[in-house]
Image (tube, rainbow, N blue to C red; front, top):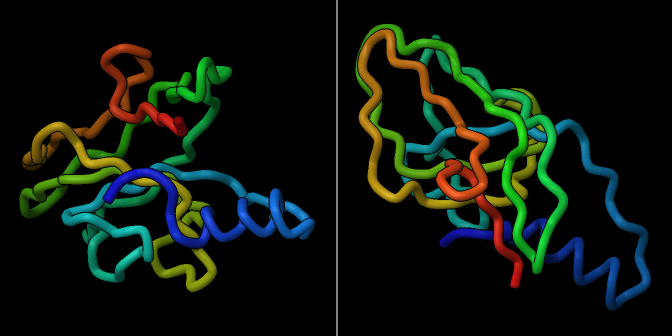
Length: 138
């Protein structure tokens, strides 16, 4: 599934329909996944390798008709060791995959699985029409 995570959807409902305070969002990071993280943020789906670290997401374009995209190009470190197949990308709050308080906010499947081999650097493009992370909420 792509789009809102369960935790973000619940927070939005609580804020907009139940009068609860909007949750504070910590720094947002891009995360790469080897399988669908699901709306429930299933463990074991994020890339797990010594070279891998989540990357700060940076800025997003002002939304138009419920659509935005990352306005900053983001680059992951080069792959070291074994190749990895990336199928999904997400936005997580929490810098580390081992952070027990990390929350998935959004996720999207890539158009096709991307095989990263040694020395490849995955980049999240910031082009509005070809970018790797375009979010549509309508």
